[in-house]
Length: 497
Image (tube, rainbow, N blue to C red; front, top):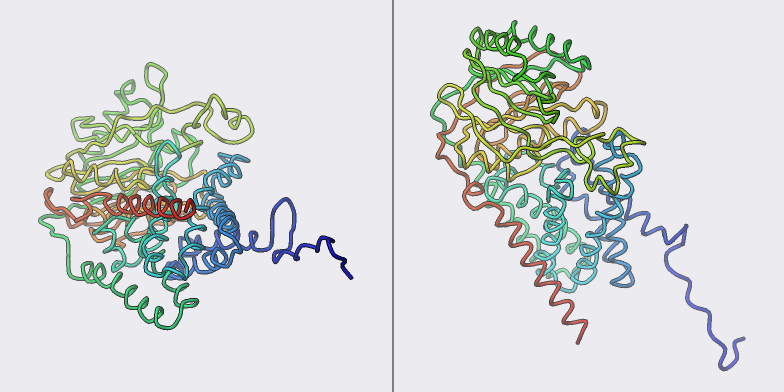
């Protein structure tokens, strides 16, 4: 019996504490954050993206306080990044945990938005919750913070109707639609019946317009380009790697363009005129060669360059602009350069180029980009604006060969193709080499376990052809920023009152 003035014991918390602030609900949020990666290759369950956020959103919605919802959102974000970037462990080591904790923090705002708006303000939730997610993706896409990987919209690379969203508003519009649909599902589960009946048509309208656009708008084409992609496999010795690529190339039928993968030439061509002459002879026999030089120059600097070689020698050069964090440089090296001593992180920083450029092979203009640069929507738009009719990526993923990274990486070319209305190819030294038409439909796929080449004929659009995304750029992301800021200000004003 409790006497007057005796403090009553506090109610038992709903969540069972495990350790150090971890509760069952927070642990479940961590697992829920990892689940969206099932929608990406290799699992390839792209359809799951339209439902996979529901458990994490439900955990945030059921939080007893706004603060707890934010914490659960944080755990969700950390889980997402751990799953999305697990393959970077050889290069980043224990730094991956730090990345997950720090960069998972923005999802706290997402969790709080869910707790605030679902189900009290259903239509506002359909706008704000996807917008907050998009702002998080935009933050992750900033090159100084590492750059984008596993943007939710990229999970739809196998579905041309959904890629129609990319043609309208880039990968951002696909991500927005996915999160909005997941929000609609949560609302339908918890909102009163009248609201649920209104939410379903809203979600259908959200998808119907872009799908109709994708099905009825075939990109124009006024010529073709035959491209051969060369994939010699894992050959660590630079001389052996070069010899393997030459051997495969010699067996090819004539093509307009032959593309080798990233780091296919481990020599400075400026100091190897004999090698340049040999490659020029190959080009004269079978078609222009786009190789990738990965070597120190005469000044001792090292960078990666796409080099176009024709029958008369070197025709043009592009230096990789967006480098791979930890793989090709260490951000804030003065502070965390010690990672290179306990992992395979870059022992020195490569030198980046100064921006996108285009090259001409015959009467077709190509936009060469290198490896990780396929993750950046703005680079695809940049070469399209400069007149590129075909986008060409050169890649090497041998460090991550047995992970989900190579197919995820190749899939990004499909999204860039749909965004820009340009056929897109990727020649990967060790796989996956792939080709997609101007709507992102797959034409070829040479997986990591295969060696050799693949030849595709691309329907090439005129240089002036433009998708809505080409014309208007990242307007969807910018609108999401405006909506998120307005929501944050409204929430702060309400709390102050």
